[in-house]
Amino acid sequence: MAQITTTIQVQTGPRDRSATLLRGILVFPVLVFLGAFATNFGSDNNLSYSAGMVLAPAFLALLVRGKYPSYVLTFNHAVMELNARVGAYLFLLTDDYPSIEANPKIAVEFPDVAGGKALNQFAPLFKWFLAIPLYIVGAIYFIYALIVTFVAWLSTIASGIYPEWAIHPVLGTIQYWNRVYGYAFVLVTDEYPSFSL
Image (cartoon, rainbow, N blue to C red):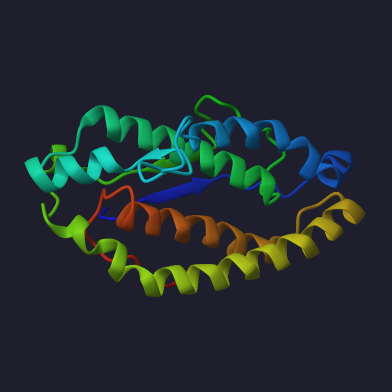
């Protein structure tokens, strides 16, 4: 495994219709909690934080020492799993409210970086640039997932069952963006991510 893998046990039915109807309101507290990680109080410069992940220390440690600090890796892994739990709930893949602790139904697995030895020491200098086509495709996937989620939201409210046809585009978008983050920002792989969902 050379890419980040994301596994989410999708719940198709029966679903809680009232929780589905109010999903945008119910998810707000956990979005505030997640946003607290992304806030760098006292500064307008957020270069070291992106969606709560610690990026600058990993970048500098890899570039200068060729090492990936284990504590940074552990923190980034925990925040990516929290992001996945929030995304799965927000995009209706599950009715399980996003826990601030690990959930065995939603997992993000990092490739073994061997303390940074498995990574190219100088790749962080250009990965973000090489990922520009991935950002463009990812933005299209994200818009597609939003549209699919809206239709699935209406369907789930009406029937109490999440439609099977919506699973692949929504889950695939979450998996895609985690692979992109793993390559371009979290820096846990040198393998260029696939463009497919």
